[in-house]
Image 1 (tube, rainbow, N blue to C red):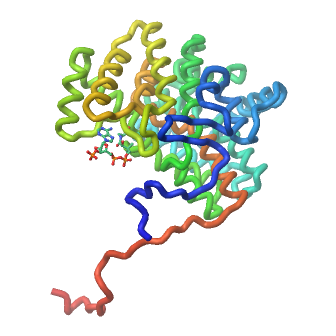
Image 2 (image 1 turned 120 degrees about the vertical axis):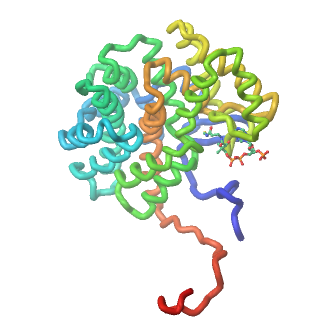
Image 3 (image 1 turned 30 degrees about the vertical axis):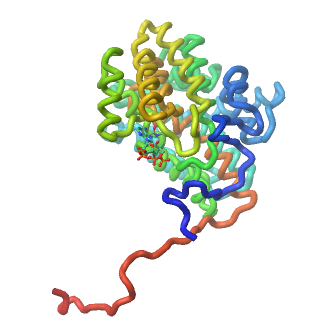
Length: 373
Ligand code: COA
């Protein structure tokens, strides 16, 4: 039987990581509602939850934080790659390339036990923001900054970007934005990670596949396109007309629609709040105001709901990230989820290999080169 286009409605994995109810607009990690986690938890705690199945004790959380903070520095060879390609490569291509190259020196690269995968998971999760920020600084002619192990994952990410310690609101905004994107069922990049992991290829191979998949504008690339749209519109009073015209021309509005959610993406609720608070505190409220008008217009005209990428865009922008860093931030946020899925895939692995329906020409005789017209 042929599945629907895009494998819509097909259940292709069992997972104990995240639960999505697309009709009700619900998302939870290991049974904990995303709303509770966004209000009370943080990125490192949720990473622990995904990888070990339970919320950590105080001592376990301290250990997870310590382990991750200790693995942020870049191998000199990775830094050399960044220096060599900083001005030519896009941040997403650079991240994919460096993550792939990090396999070369990883002591566990050929081992795929749960313990080895967790060690690689810590290293990859810890170092990806260093890759993104080092590239960003190098392409602007600045030297990369050494990570600060006394800072949280999110605060250090911002510190390595700007060289100044972020304020509490900025840190919390990035922390919550990253936490909200940790895992999301069998989305395209997670599926790619599981397919690669399912061949028993190594963790770096799986994460490299996932980063490549996240890049597309129908997936992680949408957050970048949202900000391009906001900047193109420019002013709040032009937003409604812009969106109306686009929709009447049957164009897609980035940051709207979702394969699974039939109602508002629950992550968008928290990102909307962060975007508003950051806008007020930075004296730049127009991005949020414009976003609200776009959201209302999309709802009225096509009953379209905002997805995670819509308010993430203005949140990242207000945090000082260049637009082409938005998708790499998403990759840094989703990496622990990909890692958890590869580990889950390995615990009960069977090669993922669906069937195809052949629709090409029927069998025919080979025609020698000199007989072809
Ligand atoms: N803007 C305008 N119309 C949209 C839309 C959007 N962002 N998203 C979906 N639609 C419309 C489609 O045009 C289609 O309408 P039709 O039935 O009149 O032709 C209908 O909704 C179904 O859309 P479809 O693209 O078939 O849904 P999908 O499940 O294949 O795609 C997405 C889901 C996410 C790829 C799609 O909504 C999209 O391209 N969104 C914009 C990119 C984005 O934000 N991606 C990030 C996802 S987290």
